[in-house]
Length: 482
Ligand code: UTP
Image 1 (cartoon, rainbow, N blue to C red):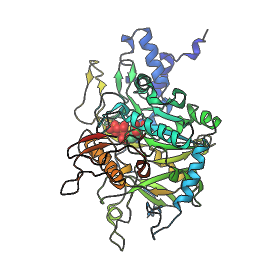
Image 2 (cartoon, protein in one colour):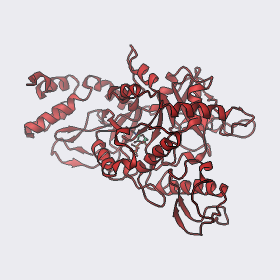
Image 3 (cartoon, helix red, strand yellow):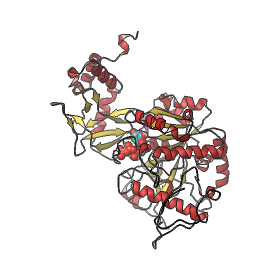
Image 4 (spheres, protein in one colour):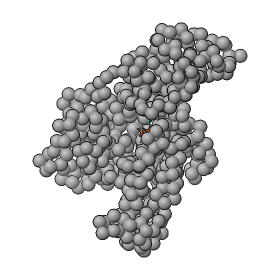
């Protein structure tokens, strides 16, 4: 029998809540049956209550800008064009190094998929969103097909780990099971959950109630992956399989290269890389583009959020008229498992800085118990960002990639929406097909005049299209999946 002390009980939690001034969380405890009281106690016990006053204080801080380190320089990067006089480098050498690691089973794919997807407003895990420009296949499927394609290409079973959150863990697993893991071996695919942080009333710093038996919480940001990889046992399990590096991607970008030998090779073998955590960058289209920017400060590469980069630097141009701070972050990394282990096993403990977001969070009215759906942001959510671990590396490299690798679906319309992703999916496929001799219809302004979706199992890079089955020409207005 489990000793009674192993179960969190509301009486001991009440004392802890009193000590931190958050007893409103028990406002409806007396209305609950035994199961409800146990559920509430377990949910409260899962929160680091003693840390709540510090979190609440930070949530209410008026300064919305995070402190930026003193002198910022642009971070150096390996240009997309390896022959660029700016910084020539040997692409083939690193491609071979990366390929050798992939073939030897030292690389796993890792996708963070625990977010709330609130901007997209889709009912269900974001990975279930129909993202294929023609087929409407899901983001999960589009990435799964890349893992299959890379496995076939390199003759190896590539493990794929996905981070979910308590919000979407079960529906994510159900979706994979319903779709038979999209042709992957179920043993190849693994899921673990990230942690959560409480959401705070933006005026009082009090934690909110999502239901009578549940405090309002939010996933702890993609930075939570660096902890959850370790605490879930994924690091240990993958290292036992012989994996050394994780190819980190986010679920909302269907064109991200899940396994990129050049990037992996640079991460592992470049002389200025400590092989801990590396990043891709895309050149910003204009100064106003809202992406984090790679900078160098105090000898370390780091990403500064667009809102924290001083305007003078955001707009600064070099002698060629190019933006000096032009390296935008598309959130694509390679992370070594040893690095994740080192962070988590550090004797000083490991924490990433917190970031605040002002959001609409549904919550119970403490007088009536009714659920309030706010029309204006009413709460502060706290999150951590994975890129904040970059300055914790000894040395970290950045590789430029082309714009096509960043086709995210974040908003229902406008920027970074399904519509913009379809255009990028189509344009990339069109350029590859044209290079392989296929006639693709274009309008007078050069825009592609059809919709094309390329299955990763057909090609994950331009050269693979040469041998693939393809038409001689595509008709204007056609919708074609290849
Ligand atoms: P976003 O920052 O775009 O957030 O996540 P989101 O939660 O998906 O969407 P919004 O902001 O509510 O509209 C970028 C990536 O990081 C993952 C997301 O799933 C997405 O792949 N993520 C984000 C997590 O895994 N956990 C989090 O706590 C936050």
